[in-house]
Amino acid sequence: MDAVDTSVKQIFPLFESDLLDEINAQGMIKSFAENIQVMEVGESLAHFPLVLNGALKVFSENKNGEELLLYYLESGDSCAVSLKCCAGAAKSQVSAITETPTTLVLIPTAFMEKWMAKYPTWRSFVLNIFSDRFDELLDAVDGLAFQNLEQRIKLYLTDKSLILKTNELPITHAEMASELNTSRVVISRLMKKLEASSFISQSRNMVVLKA
DNA sequence: ACATTAATTGTGT
DNA sequence: ACACAATTAATGT
Image (cartoon, rainbow, N blue to C red; front, side):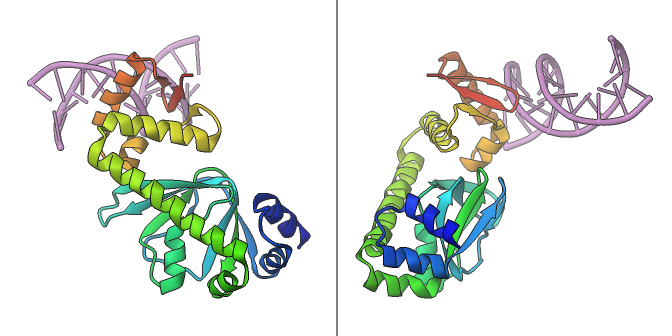
């Protein structure tokens, strides 16, 4: 399919054309609607995902069903955790859910390593993915360890508005609570504060970031 | 247009 | 953390 080639090319302009051809030949395009579980804890991966467009959130989930948001993926990203899984044939420790309608290119894991050796651009792409995600993870951990919840909320909201490309965020306090894994009441109280300091304004199912 | 209900948000202990 | 009050959106009549 030529559509594959052209869109991959647009998003990963650095890839050499041989590599694009291989992606074109081996990759499968898959589109998802918004709010679809793309990956679940415990699932093992036969394919390595590249995000063409859209956005997904990646989070870890404990046995009680509590979530903790790790990071967002958007166009041009991929997931370091799935890289690890490919390499070690390990099972995924995280889940991913589409945040907007999303399309992915799925590449059979077998090609991962071949391409690493064959294509310098692929190699550096993969290394970059690792480094980017690692940084984001550090941020997340830093937030957990050192920042107060108010800071985390601010970060969460600004991040989300970046991903969704709007500052009108259709979320409930309960959803935020589960992603940042606190209780809803605490979120409500902090959100009230943020509203008072006119960082946001809110109404039912809606938070608006102020400029 | 009004009443009923369910979901979301606010507050006091 | 819990319980409950207040508010708002959705639905039926």
